[in-house]
Image 1 (cartoon, rainbow, N blue to C red):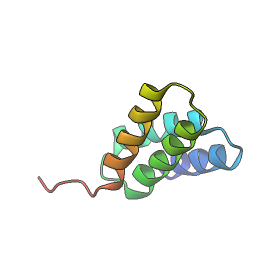
Image 2: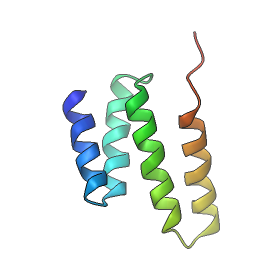
Image 3: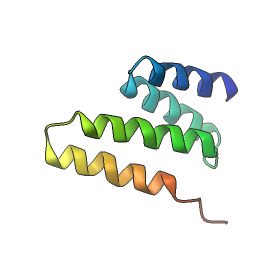
Image 4: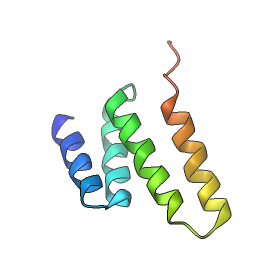
Length: 75
């Protein structure tokens, strides 16, 4: 998980938000409650939304980013 997070952070630094979001998906599949991973994916999706021309896609990216910023519910 630490290597995935590091690679996702590097992808964001290189302005590759799509790859960062994909890596965060892998990270969150391993540990869904990983806060740094959730927040990084939210940042990546917000970046993608800023560069999206399609209103539906923008809304989707921003909605998912908002959900990722909320703390996960305790089971």
